[in-house]
Length: 353
Ligand SMILES: Nc1ncnc2c1ncn2[C@@H]1O[C@H](COP(=O)(O)OP(=O)(O)O)[C@@H](O)[C@H]1O
Ligand SMILES: [Mg+2]
Image 1 (spheres, rainbow, N blue to C red):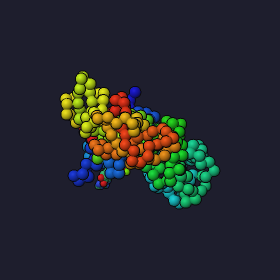
Image 2: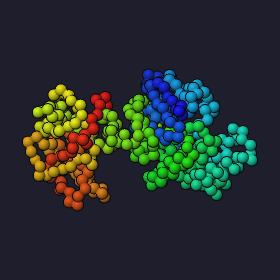
Image 3: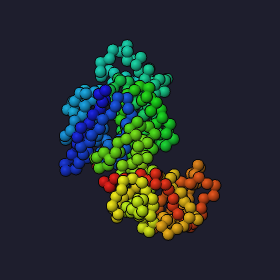
Image 4: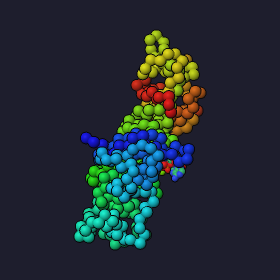
């Protein structure tokens, strides 16, 4: 099967600033993929290059096997939604949705029917005669979405589409958006800086930093197997555990200050720096287990999170680590104890982040 979208060495330079640096990406037909990264990491620039709104400095863009790198935007058949609705204020909802069909020269008879169908799809039946100013923010964003999909684009690009909405609306709209995308099967790329949004909505997530791809993978991959420290920290999911390799009696350990913690993974010469990600739900805290080579910490914070308590445990060598424990009686602030986890829960990170 040919890929829907292929980016090869896609690069954008503004003066001597590299906004996007040699991006490689393949997107399968029907997939929902998110570009996730901090502000300024180049997400919008990539999207705008795909849309034809920004000219790449070098590299290529193929859609359905056709090289579109230098095609004008209006010949790419791409639907676009931005954070700020950008509806035509003087046109009704129906007028806004009909617009892309009119520009493409669809016959008037079919336009009305197509607009009605799309209004139903975005759950705005009966709103056709209103003006955008007579709609809520969420409804306006649904109209923008309808306008972007009504002409059956080959690709849908969304730039922070839920960014201007309040939290509750965002959460309900993201599920709606995803089921609409599934129902239509339109290959979709969404830009977001919200890791929860990316994880809950996407088939694949591309994590960007400084114009480069840090990692691409399924939400589960990124969450459980971050490639490097940047991804682990950005996903907000993990403790970073750094130390040096130690081998004793044929077993491998991670030496962290005075503590020696059993580890799995590749053998390494003694003293080699290594870092691992350990998720808070894998970290236990044992107030009675103090021993000479155990990793010791002091509880400095405790938050009730419903299903579990989130403990903040201060250590000498690793700063404050998080531990999620299921208990009715969390240890008091100031309690000293041992941090415990199994070697299998340590996920090794590469050194490049
Ligand atoms: N038209 C432009 N001229 C100069 N620099 C730009 C322009 N557009 C974006 N940039 C720079 O490129 C980088 C990436 O921007 P952008 O793609 O908007 O990031 P993001 O969407 O991830 O926040 C930023 O450093 C930004 O300042
Ligand atoms: Mg942006």
